[in-house]
Amino acid sequence: MVLLRKLPGMPGWPTALGLRLPQKFLFLLFLSGLLTLCFGALFLLPDSSRFKRLFLPRRATPRHASPAAPRRLREKPRARQQVQSDGRAEPGTGAAPARDTRASFRFDYERFRRSLRHPVRGRRPGEDPETRARRMKIKEMMKFAWDNYKLYALGKNELRPLTKNGHIGNMFGGLRGATVVDALDTLYIMELEEEFQEAKKWVEKSFDLNVVSQFLGMPVFKSKALELGEKLLPAFNTPTGIPRGVINLGSGMSWSWGWASAGSSILAEFGTLHLEFLHLSELSGNPVFAEKVMNIRKVLNRVEKPQGLYPNFLSPVTGNWVQHHVSIGGLGDSFYEYLIKSWLMSDKKDSEAKKMYDDALEAIEKHLVKKSAGGLTYIAEWRGGVLDHKMGHLACFSGGMIALGAEHAGEERKQHYMDLAAEITSTCHESYARSDTKLGPEAFRFDAGTEAMATRLSERYYILRPEVVESYMYMWRLTHDPKYRQWGWEVVKALEKHCRVEAGFSGIRDVYTTTPTHDNMQQSFFLAETLKYLYLLFCEDDVLSLDDWVFNTEAHPLPVNHTNFKASVQQ
Image (cartoon, rainbow, N blue to C red):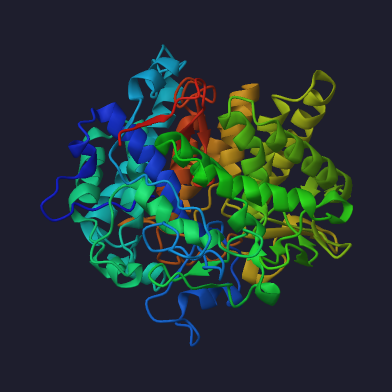
């Protein structure tokens, strides 16, 4: 998501840079990816009382502090390397000054455009009428979701469709407009031109960050992505370089989440920065962003991994694991996703990322992948050597991830991993098929004779999550098996029947009743991810082609580095 505003006396920055619409789109794609660091991933955490505390005032939270969304970061100054608010080292600290990237820069758009193998929105060749009709239906759903957000909640983070008002929440110091920025690239890809222009105009002119300036410790917020990146750099100033979970961007003070075990940092938080920070270095020519995330890899490669697995909690002070809880769902998920995607975004040159992914997947398959008595393949959680036979909705992204990795595995392993991806995706489909609404629960279990169903009341809800349809999209693109489109269409029909209300789409509290109660929340990721993946499922493969684009963990596409293109920095 993007943190942009039209500064007083200054035109909106994409226009100021003289960019044409496709160029603006590229910047919006990148910024929307980068700024998920500050927004929507918070909603992808498992739902429990301890996570609900994130939305409540904290007695120990310093005034003007800004919690970073888990799966993203923020930081703390070290005694030996203080960093000022503009990203430079303070005098006398012995730290090498960061390269000043605040000068104007020009992204080499023409070179990048020539490297694309397919137009961003494809060539739209002839297709069967049913596929087109289904795609148009999903486009109508997106327009309906956007129109109601615009009508009742524009400028708020999300729409409350039952009460027809907006939701801001207590996180991020009052930042607003999450849905606007999350929806930008989806509107563009769906060719909702008028709506895209509305969203872009609002971002450029009305994304009022005056409230943000209170915790930024500065009079106005800098509008360029590189300046935001510099503001995030102090998060890495810990003894290990592993960022803490929360930072006060004005003072540079940071701390760990209160619920995080023994002051630890979260794997899916510090492990989900690589794509965005590497792209920041490419845009700026400043290697500091890439160096920060490469150091994270060094720490992870150095620490001993139990059974080859990566636990979810790591101490930013010692660099050791705090407890041995391993999950491919919440708290761990996107770390694994970013390993294979870092390799793909590098045009398959980042061999370290590929090896880390291969080794992690081998350990996951050996210790966590299980088959139920009924023949369903699932990925269990691991708690100090004891398996918890539970799979969360969040873990259902893994079918698509494994398929994406299988496509580039050696011939002797390719079919094996494609089969594993298909089996996991089928299990996640079963979690939908076995509910009365044909929508899946937050988590489902394989114990006491139950398979692929929630057994606890607290796990029966559905909040418009995207992970299952994400895997359908990847499986369709890589196999063209028509069942994935059929399964996706079943989701569309279920969303229309059970989640569509008079003024938008709402999550439901129990997927096992045909008359569910709505939760009165149209999540921003529904527009960013769920509807985008469904739409792409019914598109030709050249629309946001996997040859040219890698989706970050919030489904915002970042370009594959075919040509090692970089920003041209003008000093």
